[in-house]
Amino acid sequence: MRYCREEAPSDRSVAFAGYDLSSSGRLPLMREDYGSGSRIATDYEPFDGAKERTRLWVRMLVQTADEVVMDVGGVHAPVANALRRIMLVEVPTMAVEYVTVHRNSSILHDEQLAHRLGLVPVLADARAFAERPPGSAAATARDTLRFRLRVEAPSETTSTPNGGRAQSTAVYSDQIEWVPLDAAPQPAARPRLMPGILLAKLAPGQAIDLEMDAVKGYGQEHAKWSPVATAAYRMAPRVQITRDIIGEQAQRLVRLCPMHVFDIEDGTGRAVVRRERDCTRCEECVRVVRAPVIDTADDIEEDEGEGEEEAMPPEDAADTDASFARSIRLGHDPEHFIFSVESTGQYRADVIFLEALHILKHKCVRLLQEIQRRPEEEGFG
Amino acid sequence: MTQEPSVRASAGCAVPRTPIDGASDRPPPTVHIEQSADACQVTLTLENEGHTLGNVLRYMIARDPRVEHAGYSVPHPSENRVKVNVITRPGTRALDVVQSALANVALLCDELSGRYEAAASGGTSSTCP
Image 1 (tube, rainbow over the protein chains, first blue to last red):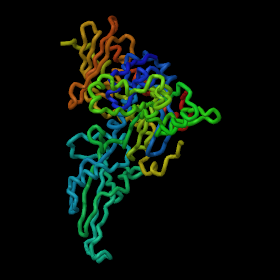
Image 2: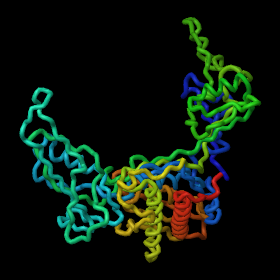
Image 3: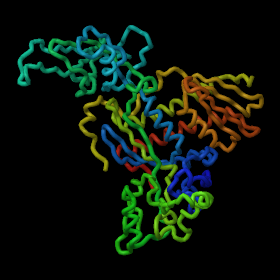
Image 4: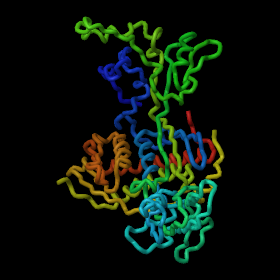
């Protein structure tokens, strides 16, 4: 496999004033082993279906209704990124889009209340619905779920222990009821909105009476249609100890890492990489802290040229006083992604990634069909 | 670390694992194709698509050894449109390369779906290192 090699920029030590990352002549990242992550497409080998098949692997780490964390291996960043982007904005869900306010005497303005209603997850499978044509007044059971909210706070002001002040009445999403449209067959599970979400508080005598239509939509248009709270990936970190770190130094290394990546091997006292996955590549372990340079007023002028070099640790002292820059190499595996997907409730979290794959495939297949359907096209010009 | 689905699973609707054909009611893709006289250069303009498809398509096209150059751009951020440009070596039709790249991405999605479903249903996912 070919990777894009990158030379360490010479001005790196300037960019990270106070740290010297280039004392070894290059960045202490395993760029030449694992790639910088910024590969160009020609660095990948030609696509071969059979070979690709053997490379792919998936491992579930967390699988609950709300959250999925998994390893996806053998894919490259453009594919992982396309899937992430699709999960965020292209997996359809149902969300409240049209609100008809019959009565609203609460302190919330109509539009504010409608906005809040829009953000409440609608627990229905949008894939079973059609898109409602924009501007169409006629809602059908095929493209719309209608809900109604009718609440009224009791009007009499009963005296309460806290000085006669009336209690407010909380309105929760549980109070929203589904209204069947036309003669649609009753579904097994009544469609509903995510329960337990506070919508408004009513003072005595105030009332809300409104109808809302939930329609199918995509996160591209508004985030209320996004099925995920987060869908993100990171490349799996790789940490290598290239030279033995023993005894006192090993203990110092273990203390140095804020993520507790390193441990000491029993018996040998050697530092080993124990929790590679936890590495955030903060580079604390490979940081070289320069001795502070105290300039006196007289020195400033003559120091200007050479000051930097003097401040750097001598070549052979690297691992003894300050840093493990020459003993540890940090990098990441560009073909191993750790995905984390959190559902907002419309779908089980483990369905969303699968749906994204399905959508990406469909995009390609339909585009392919469209190209094949075309006669020979016009030329440039 | 794998946990049983929590109670919230039943709080949601019953969602089948296998996707219902959700993409089918989307309008058909709009694509404008410009080709050079020798068919070695092609520019596709895809409406209602962006970096999501553009980048993955460029990546797959560029993996084809017959390709000299592959690039994509979103000409204006407020227009939902992406242009994919391909130049192939002499003797290869650029549009053929695009078509095989599209098929390859679809194949990759299928393979990954299979792996994912195996892993999600608790089976052996495959040859993980």
